[in-house]
Length: 445
Image 1: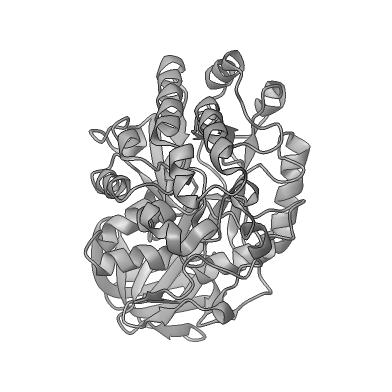
Image 2 (image 1 turned 60 degrees about the vertical axis):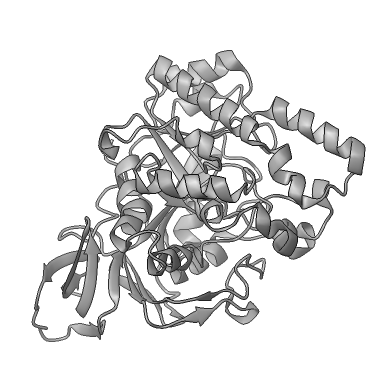
């Protein structure tokens, strides 16, 4: 039997912070108490007053495997994730080939079983013509359905209204959507390319991929979900206007329509384009400081339910192209929790609220079995954070395969020292346990 005792921690769980000890037995949290005595052969870790958090569950990543592994792969990015306190991830279907059949979806699970250091699940990708395959998706061991209502790759833009309504009406699976109105974006793009050609200044990115484009698509998806009774989760809100589409008068478990915000939309604004350029080119675009403030407000008053990363790496060579040829997306999993903890230090959000949005709510929304909380009987997915040990993001500490970060040069006030995945110490002050892999997430549905 493998047992580990974490002593003298500030344990953060379900809106409380308390000093205590935690005992891990095999892969499960066995006991939580003010003072636990170590038995023989128990490994003891003295937290010395560090925060002990549930592992961050990132509900939206792009790890680029299969087919795009010059940018990233499941092994490299899951290793970066656990260094960043992310113990479970849900990966998107727009790889190559796209996960739009059950066989192709299972191929990705096979890769993860062999290579992923974190726990994992994948989304099935909907298209205009794969409803029959979509309906075969197993709700017990697949995270959900992903629909691109804008900014798609390959044939994954679902723009047939009849098909969209059929999907919403036919599945009880959670449907996650990327919402940007393609017609609006196309019109804006034509306008700016007529003026600048391919080399459009980055400051126009949030005007091309505008508030109007986001709101039109989000409001349309919500209207359809209300009409059909679909379980809808809207990814990466980027505008204040969209936040008014969501409610906060019922518990998250009772919501049929939920929302996510990503770290980059909470951290950056259009004022950063001059310095960061294409490194902060995302879809949806990073918008104004007023939008950022509105997103924070909605996160804190519970109209927005989840914080995620939308980790989507590209090579620095790809990102160095002119506007129309530079892909959108960037790497975030290693530094996302640190960025949110910086906002905790600044008094923007409490650590209890941050844990709710990063850990508890993803587990509730996706109905993930025995994860996302520090509870006896739950899997020991845990993160120790020294809030008094600063670190600066530099080239030599970046673990992403692409080798860069939009946070390069940023000094964070906290450091993640230990990450446990299923009770196994997978990350310890810069050293990784590469012998053990994560597990496939299961869902209470």
